[in-house]
Length: 299
Image 1 (cartoon, one colour):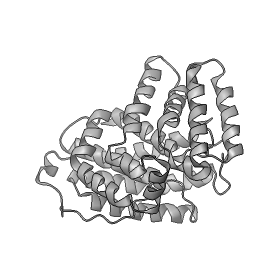
Image 2 (image 1 turned 60 degrees about the horizontal axis):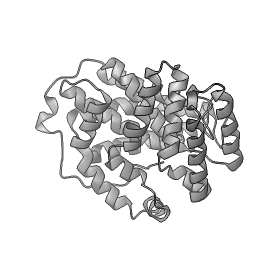
Image 3 (image 1 turned 90 degrees about the vertical axis):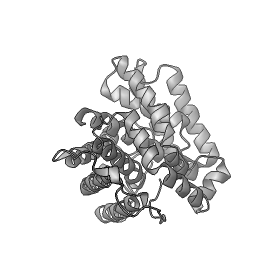
Image 4 (image 1 turned 90 degrees about the horizontal axis):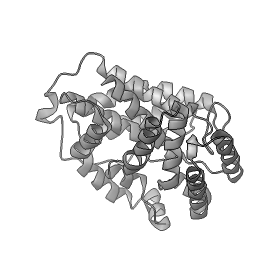
């Protein structure tokens, strides 16, 4: 998962003049923060979800369970509201990053040092900020508008950050594996979420599938394509390619729309656990999709 604690020198020192184009409705930040927390709960509640923690079991993790995740997500409520407000002001990325670093410390305090949501703090934080930016200009927080705001407001800073973090251990490892790092994914405004997961979500939703099926289909779509460095860290490139092949096989026979899909997904879960593989980047992507869907209903 992507850490936020790399300082970024910014050319900006405060809100842009256009930041106050529209006053946000009272309580809007609270609603967006609630959507983010519920999105984290959505991700936790989805099962089966190969290798990951859910209310059913702890997946490939020995140091955390669903209760650990619940303590973490409840501790992050204030963070999502705060970074939404910074986004509405058009604050520079450095300010968002400081907010995220503080949120990470809050998470670790709540979990007694266990990393449950470091990646989600980054991706959901940026999306909350982008929603604030859209709303500050009187727009509807559609996925397309949120992505456009992310690119327009922080794209250059995120690209600069991706270049610098390529020299850090996580970036070096990604280059060694030939993968796109989490920093690079952010600099591109999360193509896996918006170009892979979101179309899969919408297609499944249009087909009339249940909410569980929609979420599962989007998750497996991400699993099949995202450069999930968590998988590579645990299982090397061999583990990542194996995990992708399992996702492709699942989707090829109908995915979450196929008869008996849950049994097939549970079987995959057991295989992931046996290999100690955990697609944490895909979990973060699923949380982002759940957030986009939730915030679209309140914006």
